[in-house]
Image (cartoon, rainbow, N blue to C red; front, side, top):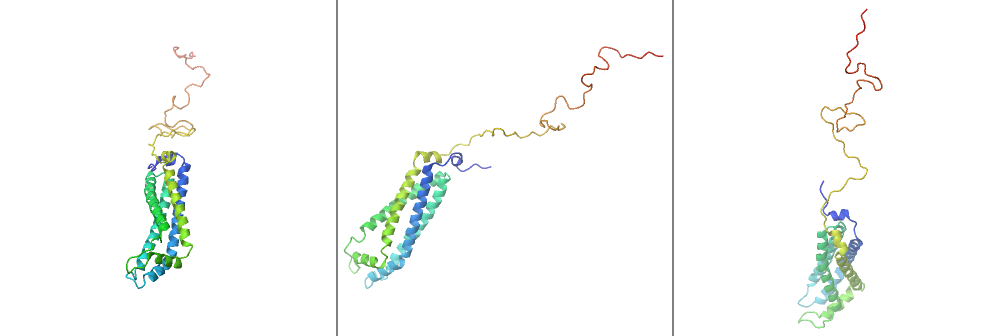
Length: 248
C-alpha cells in the first residue's frame, strides 16, 4: 500500500486557519467570475463607444483592439478563478506545493488587482489627445454613455472584495498553525489496536491440528489416551516379578 502524499494531512486535523484561507480563495474565485461576466456583458457597449469615438480619425476601426483587450481580461479572470478553486481543494488536503503556488498566484493577483483599481481611479483624468486622435475625455464620455452605469461600481466593489480575500488567504496560510499542518512527518510504526487478535500461525508439518488449541505450536504432552487411568494402581508395580498362578 502506498503512503499518502502528505502524512500530516491524514494524521493531524486541519487547523481553522487553513479552512478559512480555503473559503477566502473560493470567495476570490467567485468575485473574479462575476467580474468576468460583467466584462463579457459590456463588450457590445465598449465596441460601440470606441467606434463612435474613433470615427473619422486615424484610429478608425481600432475599436476591435479595445474589445479584444476587454475579452482577454475577462477570460484571464475566469482562468485565475478556476485555478484558485483547485488550489483551495489542494490546500485543504495539506499539499505544501499548493500553498506555495497560492502565494505565487496570490501575489500576482494582488498586484494586478491593485493596479487595476488604481487605473480605474485615475481614468478620464487626461484631457489632451494626440493629433488626429480622439481626446481621452471624449472617449470616457462615450463609454459612460454606452456602458451601463452599474458596471463600473459593481466591478470596483468586486475587485476590492477579491483583493482583501486574497490577502487574507495568503496571510492565513503563512501562520504557524498552517505551517505545522503542511509540514511532512516521517512515517512511524503504529502499535496494534488493543484487544485485537494476532494472526494465527500455520501448524508445523506433520502436526495435527487440535480444536481449541494454538495451531502454531506442538502439544506437550502429545494428545492421546493415557496408558493407565488416573486413580488405579499399576497392574505390575515396578521392581516385582510378575506373579504366576499356582499350577493345579
